[in-house]
Length: 189
Image (cartoon, rainbow, N blue to C red; front, side, top):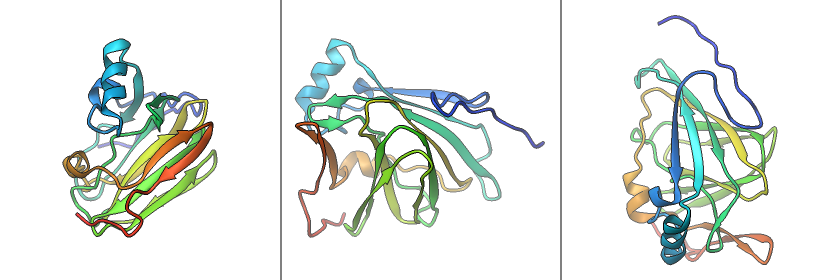
């Protein structure tokens, strides 16, 4: 492998190299709390929730995987558009999110039920420690764009989040962003 560079547009999240993937509401029906609103949105116009570009590198120790994510502004019911969220397959791997534009919340949870929510705004770097599931939510009126980097061997475990979800949800209540914690004592998986 030879060194390379990627050009990034901080406003749109476009990257000059890598593989672009998209997620629409129909791809995330079971991730939103209001299943009826999610089905209705998917059947109506099936809006784009987010897209991400990953650099095609070997998923093995020694490499640093990285890419860009853009979450568009929008709601399903009261819940802000968000990424699916994941644990790392190798739970002992961390990740860094660098917010380039927009406003968001980084929702995190451990399998023992401990939770955390960090604000994302331009110029902030959020650290996701090992053993924490994580998802980002766009709480602004413009696209939320961030750069992510993690160890090559980390992998992704979307299945645990798909099965159990996150305890905390980020919602819009009358124009105010509210973090809903239905289980303040934690839940554990």
